[in-house]
Image (tube, rainbow, N blue to C red; front, side, top):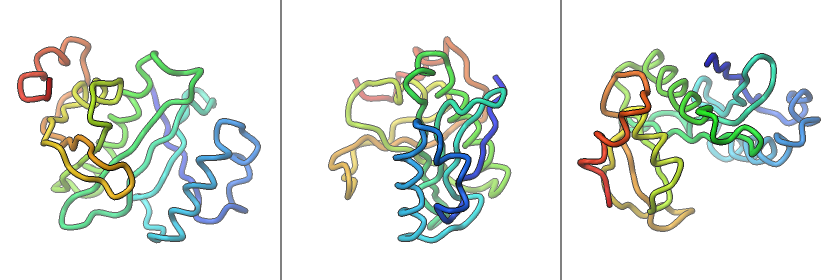
Length: 165
């Protein structure tokens, strides 16, 4: 699956192609507001994910690396869920982070329960690190990228050993 990450620009007025897409309108405004609060530091920004010219989801970094760590976030638009796209978007973010700063620790946070995002992270080589308190979401699970391998369908079961039950 060939995912292309299309940068979300710093200013709302510079994102005309996204403003007309109903799937992008809310997240676009949130991204621009986020940039205003933390700064705009490419490549540590937000992106829309595309396949064959169609936007299928969102991806991004929650700011530039701090203390050698960077957090990722991703999602697919509702009509594209359950097709492996979220897994591919996550993989693309990991690849971008590693190409930019090979030593960076790549982190992710999920709700403190099993869900699609926990499956996606496991498929991409992330390991559960424990519960943490997120200032916006309360108690969440924190994950860290541990292995440089391509996602595989059978990997989820073998990765559960160190993960929460």
